[in-house]
Length: 266
Image (cartoon, rainbow, N blue to C red; front, side, top):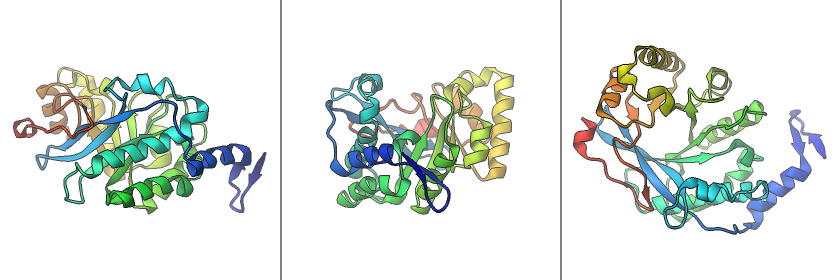
């Protein structure tokens, strides 16, 4: 059954009750998982800017070994569990500077009501003495976004809580210009497919240069992800991108924060 609130927003009570019940009742998952962390570096300051939390199997298996077990019925409980697990693992490993970001992935479809669905995250932060203002949530869609207004509400609500938001895989699939115009996130992560071999590709350099100029004018930060060579890093830096991520700096490490050699940042 669908009704509309005073602001005209549609709500499906049956679906909403199912989702909220998964959060409220702490529905258990029939599988276990853990998190790996990969650093995001700031070339301008030569420091680690943050860490992205990535799903892994309990023995370090790849993400798909876990994601393949997530049915529609488990999606909401799994989303909540990922947020909590990432905070629990990172809380006593992150630098005590109050600035280093923890980036957590989520699917917008796994959030029914932004304020209600963030409560488990805030509770985990309080329990582990983790500053929630260090959180960044990045989202992507593997299919065309069906309800942009809903995602906009998520972004606006998270901004009110002091979280950063990021669009992942920008430049690939459906994460494109219309999504950027509709949502105005704090940050976009340029996809590896756009950056691979950028040092040898004039068209890629021109495209990335244009994206950097455009996002700068909108007050949005660009992050280059998936970098694997020194040449790629130097090229994106020359194009005006300071935040970078990829195997060149460090591979994801299961249950720990990998170190980045200083010489790789200079």
